[in-house]
Image (cartoon, rainbow, N blue to C red; front, side, top):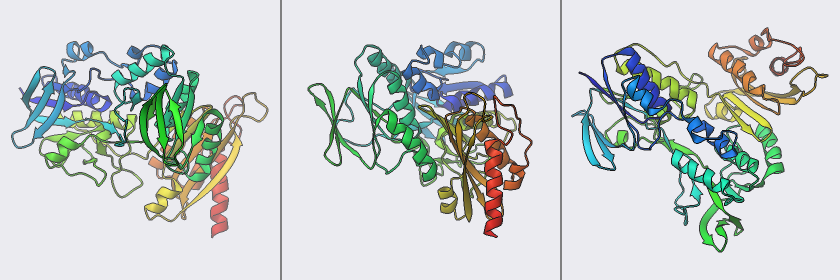
Length: 450
């Protein structure tokens, strides 16, 4: 019987294993997961910390026993893959009981991404968290529940850092956010990230252009020392300075990698190693607007690429057509969303691009709950859409950005977006939706530029 081995039991890995089972009912499938949890919602961490999600078990999508009994997948928890030999087609595994070797006919690497942990003094302190493994998340939540975390330092002002700051404020913690760069959310253009920054300042002590240099035990918790000499006391420190592909074993085996360490795959999720596929946060996904694969670690891509990898590895037909980098985050009262390219990203890619900003009502002007929605549209000089960013207190921005994502997949231009027949009713949108308003404004800017 042929054997498929999957490294990683996260979204991509379990999607791959499940798709493989649907494709081949007789295939032997083994999943090696290094931690004690599989198939759980990493993106739900801030909401579990905040108490919105009451029990960590609620983050688990499918229980291990269901994979084992209903899908006949040999899910092995606390089993870390330490190396692969593509010539012999073997995987080296390490468990609490020792080391072993497992042969495979096909292999899917879905090891995910690992948090970047700067080599700072004190980084190994038990009150320093990187928030990636369920066990660590549970430990932080228990400390908060016990009233042992009242002051917290969050290092990093990207999506994860600001979502965690939001969650900790929700638990009545005094939060200091330390960011080495000069602004928050650098995956937005400055005109949009500045809107987010204004709101963040209202809820936490935000220290920009300020790096953390060390952490040490103090008389009452931790003492965080910053590059300018300032010291901040904390009961806990959350490091959220980014993630990197967990691709070491594939690199050692000779797989082709990008300069940022992500695995290179084709549309069928094949790596350059024979019989080896990859999916999820470990890969550089094909980008529909750029000429090269891009490392964009997001859950929808992990699930989709996992399904493709598992299907093809099991002998089926599937293809992943690429991403446009659509993402959304809740940052205190704001919904912050983006898709496609920012103006900075487009310029860095060598594209001649323009951008237009507008502010419009999220619903009919007279309807209760109407909020301003700031929208930035990025497009080429010929009108072809390249991306959009939205910031609003109205959660509908999360779905409005999806309209632009669909338009990017369809190759729309500015006038195509302006002509869309979008829904209207006072509780949901004005007659001219914020997307229509920014598209009309962009069309005027294009005409003025001629």
